[in-house]
Length: 371
Image (tube, rainbow, N blue to C red; front, side, top):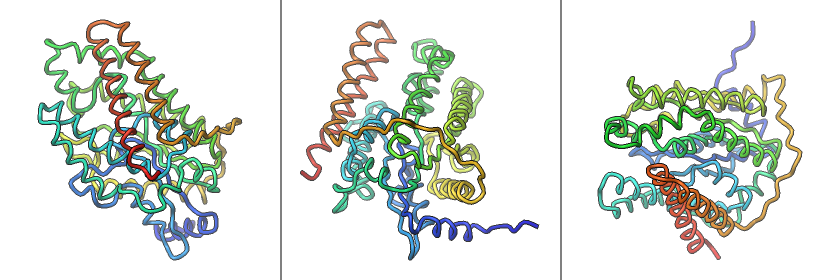
């Protein structure tokens, strides 16, 4: 009879596996990895994961890039290729939280200054001495077998269809007065919408594995939040299901681990007003990933990854390089908007304005980082 290995034994074996290699855990990059509950100051996904593997013999290094604003697939490429420091990443997370909450206040027709409450995230993201010397791409390249928790693409998808789990409900109610809902309907039916997002995720995989082909990537699927459970929300729910199917197929092509988060979402997302999981959900998701890590290292017979032939060039431009690239995105979006009419133009201008907010975030990072 095969021996059943306990969770504690699995963790101990993982600690022994990584203790001489060193362990770097990187999280990229959407808000699924951010604790957005009232207990945000407690541990999040990466902190639970690192804490479980911390012992006298192993202290994992963590680079947390999850963000409330800088959470699109292109940001991953920009951060990695410009080799942002941990200090720059943390500063961007603080300013991203403020920017995101300011936008929420504007959308809710409340005073913009109320978004300043986002500064409370300084409690968990304030840079520490030495963070300016830790660079994300360099750390990835110098670690033998880094662990990457990848959660990106959903924000790209919401941008493409022009809606989110909050907005789609209001758009549905006002569908006879505004064009928003039918714009989203048309975008979700267009196969090019999902293909564009998948191409962006594939580009991320090429970048990550082009920096270090030994990176173990654990890609989080998307769960269906409670706010999308009603029948009239089928349009969005079906898109999430199709997204997960395509993402799973892409992971198989690359030899990457797909983490199904549907059960975690059902159990730990119980809010109509917040489509993120609870603090307990972050802990549960960390335990899922630990299980996959053990399986990959000690039970999987074939762990081959897709060969990435080109070593990715790192520019080391930091925040300045990120600003240059986002500025180019802004100019492109604005030019495209001017070629469109009516709601399509308005939506493209909204995307251009998103890029302006991103530029403003990194201008603050550039001003306040260690010189």
